[in-house]
Picture 1 (cartoon, rainbow, N blue to C red):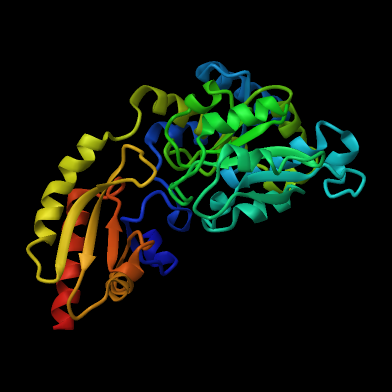
Picture 2 (spheres, rainbow, N blue to C red):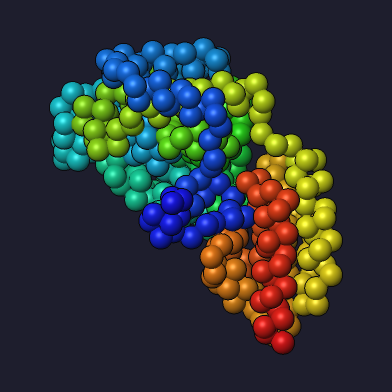
Length: 366
């Protein structure tokens, strides 16, 4: 009996990307082996967290680092740490009214929903969101004018989910933070570059362990001291409900080591693999397929499919999820008649299955 039969689960072709709703990424044999070692042994957990963090920081050329359970947990714990600033009372009472310096400033166009909201994670950490600028514009001046005696930190979201147009750069955000002696957090959950933002002067950088790095469920926070130590102290308070197991800590460290050696699939490779898929799709009436780069400028290429005719993009998306094998796509532009296919975790046979399913959907609509 397969795992799909045992729990009555559908098989899934993940053409959506490294998304939490589908389990994010596949992990390698080396990562699985490291998880096995973790699962079979005991450690002093505080020592494991501190020492693996130092080990990762050394690999990345940073002051310190720490592993958390997810990028979202990284946001909440970082916010709490920068509000409490190492205060032991605050650690056990993160929402205490005794501390009023709680405002977290971010560009309005960065307060997005990525499966949950950025705002909720800030609030979970005890922060109060202050939006700067407008949905389609945020300048350095607009950030600076929101700073008051109640400002605890600045926050920048580096993601394709955010508004890309007319937004200040991370470097500009760094300059504002330094001029006002405030810490800057950058949420770079799905990003592949583990060093650039820290090297630019960002104080706290947060990554998902299970996305670009292809580790188990985990998150990484890289940054300066004493901020990372304050974040680790959150395990005695807010972070207790977000703890990560020893097997995932060791598996994630192995994933980082592998990632630093091998990196991710190149954009050229993705485009080459997409070529026959695009050609097959363009044989169908009512489909116009092309290759597009990730909206945030990452070296990620996807198939963009414009749907016309007797069936809408929304209907195609929903029908692709039906049957014994569900195909999940990127649905962000479905209302404009566009579907995107992220093929980083899709092999050639699975692309053929997608083509067959789309052909059947179109045939049924005619």
